[in-house]
Image 1 (cartoon, each protein chain N blue to C red):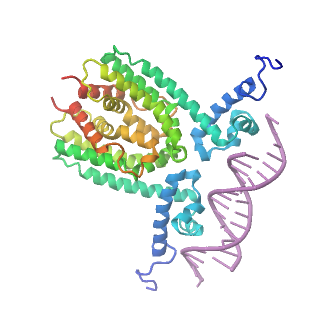
Image 2 (cartoon, each protein chain N blue to C red):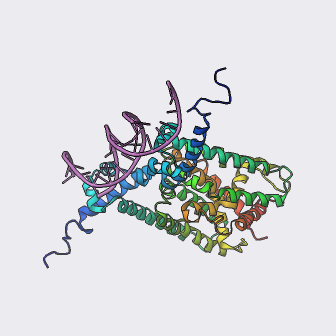
Image 3 (cartoon, rainbow over the protein chains, first blue to last red):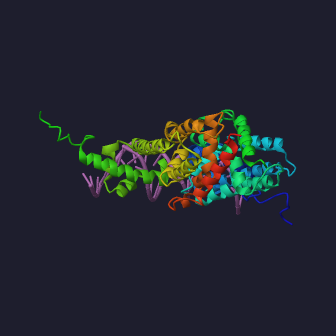
Length: 215
Length: 215
DNA sequence: CCTACCGATCGGTAGG
DNA sequence: CCTACCGATCGGTAGG
C-alpha cells in the first residue's frame, strides 16, 4: 500500500487535525447557539470563541445550518447515552428506596445545565427545525419515559395498570414544576440545583407511592 | 378649548386611527414573532402581513424591541385575565367532581394554541429577555398555581399539608406530560387538544386524589 | 402610505 | 500537490 492505515488522508474525517477542529467547534457552537439561538448566532463570533478561523468552520461544516444540526445531533447523542445510563439503573429488583434514588438522579440530570439550555434551544427553534425537536424528544426524554414505564410495571408493592401513564405521573411529580420554572429562568442555569431539588424529588416520590401503592 | 375632548390629537394614543393600527399590528406581530422568534422576525414582512406600511409600524412602536415587548405584554395580560377567570372557578365549596372540571379546563387552557406558542417564544427568548419570561411566569402560571394552592388547602376529604406542593402535583399530574411534549411539537398546535387531553386530565386527578385523600 | 435609501451587519467565499 | 488557515472582501439583507 502507498498509504498505510496509520496515515489517514488529510482533510478527511479521519485527519486528526479535522477531528480536533470538529470537537472544538462543536463545543463552542453548542454554547453559542444555546445563548443566541439559531438566527441570532454569529459565525464570526462563534469561530472566535472556538479559537479557529471562520474559514475552518466552513471547511469542516459547510454552512451554518449544517453546523447547527451537528451541534444538536451531538447533544442529543449525549443526552441519549445519559438516558440509557439512567435507564440501566432501574434494576428490576428495585425497592422503594431505589425509587427515591432514581427520582433524585432523574431530577438532577434533567435539571442540569447541560439539559435545560438544550431544551430551551430546541423548543425555541421547534418551528424552524421541527424534526430536530421531535428527534430529541424521542431519543432522550422519550427513552427515559419508556424505560421508566417498563420498570414501574414490574415493581412489587405498586398497582400499575397503565405503565406509560404511571411513568409520566412519576416523572412530572418528581420534576415537573422545577423544570417548567427553569425553562423560563436562565438565571439559575449555572447554580446547580434550583430550590431544594432533591427534596422536591423525594416529595414527588412520596406522592407517587401514595397514588400507586397496592392497597 | 381649541381641541375638544371628542377630537383627540392626531398621532397620539387616543387617535382612533392609531388605536386601530396598534391593534392590527399587535395581532399580526404576535403571530409573526411566535413563528420566527425575535431575531428571525422581519419588520417589513410583519408590516405587510398586518396590511400597513413599515413606516406605520415604526411610527406607532418606535423600534423592533418595543414592538416585541408590547406584543408580550398584551399576551401576558390576556393570559393573566384568563388565569384569573380560571381561578374564580375554584369555588370554596368545590367537591371532587368540580376538581375534575377544573383539571379539564386547566389542561385545555394551558394546552391551547394561544398559550403553547407564547410559552415557546418566551422560553426561546428567555436569555435575551429574562424579565419578560419571569414576568409571564409570575402573572400567568404562577397566578394559577397560587390560587390553586389556596383552594386545595380548603377542600374537604383531602389531606393537604403543603398547599404549594399539592398545587404543583395537581397541575403536573393533570397536564405535565402533554405540555412538555407540545412544547417540542409545533405540528399539533392548530389541532385542538393533543392525544386525549381530557382523559389524561381526569386520570391525573384520579392519581392526585389517591395521593392526597384523607385516610 | 409608499418608495427609496442609509449605516451596519450578516453568511459565505475569494486570493494568498 | 494537498489541505488548513488567515486577512480581506464579496453579494445580499437586516433594522431604521
